[in-house]
Image (cartoon, rainbow over all chains, first blue to last red; front, side, top):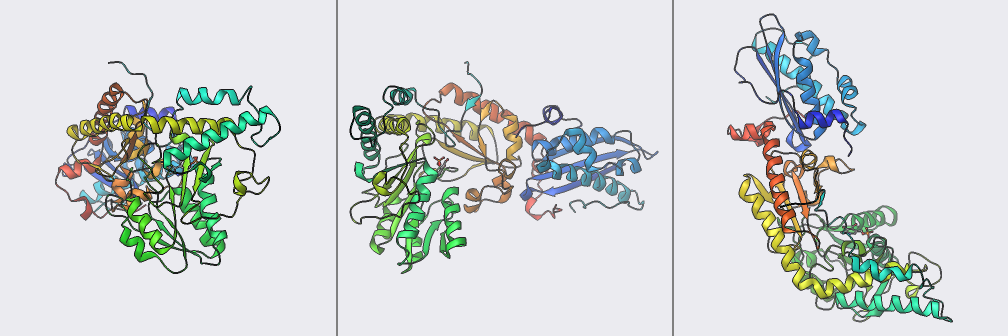
Length: 138
Length: 407
Ligand SMILES: Cc1ncc(COP(=O)(O)O)c(C=O)c1O
């Protein structure tokens, strides 16, 4: 498998790898995928009082493209509003990372992870959830 | 300590050719270019001599006689000839075969073809958690219409070596032909078609430091005499079983490779097993939650298959880019399914995704092994820091109880 330079860069220098405490104020956590399918992404957002994503973190079990998709997602999330975050499409990730067709599911998973994280934040802060993703591990 | 990268640890996929093999082949590309069936001039005689010598060399490696060796274009063709040849020749006896679940991909595909196109039925032999077939299971699977038992001698992914003599005995008692894909075993562990009761055996050049595109099928001539329907018709070469002008340089190379394996196996397997054991011990000492797939007591000396929990195979290969390796992860196969061999051991899908196969060989050095241990430990440690599963496991969460979202 040949990887695009951008996938390699995210794999070798992952952005925002790590975790926030799930119970911290303003934190939303999304965990999507399944170990038996070979990929699990955990994506977390930290949202301030103005509804802006201040920080984002990820941890991913999966192939290089899955790692790169989630790393890229955290980069894109920072500074966005909740609505802007929910507007990120998997096709944007495919395009940015030059993912081949067999790796498109990695981008879908990243989009689901974003939605799951944001919805978790909205749930926890008592706001109505929006555009439901594939759901987080519950 | 200096090593040249990339380091090759994928000997079970293919081996580099031994320079002595190349040397034995070269004359047959140039001066000695004759056709081995040309009986009326010295060009033909020289080629025929080379083929005869190679037939002896291959036969000697597996305890056969030269007349029982049919040259083919490789392991895949030998497997096709054996299984389809029996299916055709023994059609009046029945259409049932017994095949090990971990048998090789070419065997599975040939059998699937017979099921689909010819109405064959197959009984799949389960394996234990080490990947071994039990002779009792073979006995229980036999039917009056069984024409073939196929059990691969040594597995290409996990290296498990079967108890061939016990299985061969069961087949013999029942009068059923016993075939084995021995491509991974020949030249690495002692093979004796007599003691093991093998009737048909496939081998290939490129797994024993010989050339690609040449292999052989052993076809028993006595007790019983096994007959095969040819799958390639033509000039009636190879006792009518496989027509086509022989690849003389390739055949000469296969013969030389077989001879080298026979004369060097005893010392070589000890040296290689010691390197493999060091690789295994070095990795296991430095990392937690790693498990060896297959059998530790019945294993090819050059194979090591390990699952690294909480890390996915393709991402490991990406991190270990200076090392040529194979993985059982779905992401590294065309089928998008994790290894059926590792799954057959009862290993979870998750751990099948997390497996790496290290296969070393004749040209592997102790320095390379040390280098690879270091790189594996580094890479797994880094990827585990990145793994949400490792984090959850360390927090004491039972991953099997988590409700995962499917996708
Ligand atoms: C177990 C097994 N059987 C058969 C083959 C096929 O042999 P060949 O490549 O010579 O067709 C291979 C490897 O390629 C193998 O690993």
